[in-house]
Length: 248
Image (cartoon, rainbow, N blue to C red):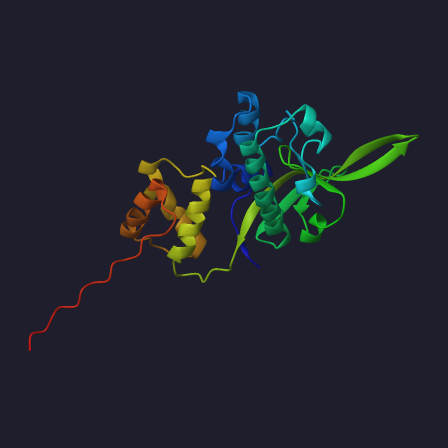
């Protein structure tokens, strides 16, 4: 079994992993589309030029762009926005892959019974699935024809999905500072860190529970705190002490 962290709404994890990543946000300054389109995509994670549309195809999100090619002719977007969209598509594929591979553990409510349970990764591999990232609903899409009219119907399979990263089983009684740094860096990406001045006080009980220890070195926490809140990508390593020189 893997140890679990606290669950978060799928939407918040989606924003952190798909929209608020550097590969997407780096195009924002060059985008010339209207302010509403920019805000809805770069901040809220809405599909470009489709206000209120947060639905992604799991089969082929790159082909699910708003209306290719017809809608792009009558409702085009700028080249920088296209590049940002392509980057988001790539990040979305990695996001779903993390769920299927078990790196992220999904739990959802069954629409009929209302009971919540952990979703088997195989639930995400069926064909025709649509993910409403805003509401956390995993839906099955079917194409129906009424005469010559083509219509897609969506049936919710799992609702109000939450996600929590799975972590390797820890050896109790020893603090794995590399693992703790990854844990805190993930919280930083999701804007879940406490106020900086309260960090040491709030982190100590979490570490004791996570690693099964009775004491936490405050000096180590203070050493981690500064680079963590500064936005560093790597945990600071202890500098090696210089060995005293021995004269002949």
